[in-house]
Image 1 (spheres, rainbow, N blue to C red):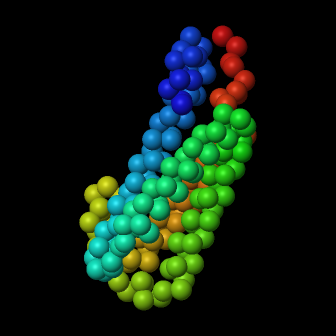
Image 2 (cartoon, one colour):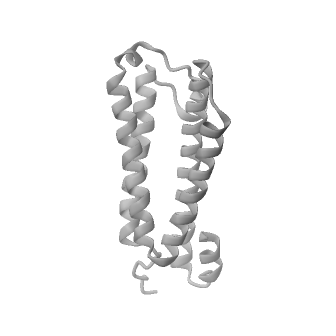
Length: 160
């Protein structure tokens, strides 16, 4: 979607730059969310927890598919609604991570396995790792709230 905007406004360099910056930001957030998924999948596998195809593969895929398309449609109709939906989703995720850590004090003494330390960082405990993931969700929420104020790259253009 942002690539189409970039192509459309390529002649207006200030706007094209803002579109490009939004693309870079979105990619970074996607990569960060991917690390969360990889880390959590590794933790589940280390604990030997059984995962059903329906509940742990198909259902999350369908939810993500639905969320993506609703978010995209909202962005087309009214971008601030899309950013609000994402902010609410990230807020919920942040609180769930923090509540989970608070409910499981034993995580404070369990070491971070560090499988993805080179890409995501090494933390003093599993609790610290999960708190960092929660903090990332807060950052994504704050980014969405900021983007609500300028959802379509319509900041004033500097006078040449």
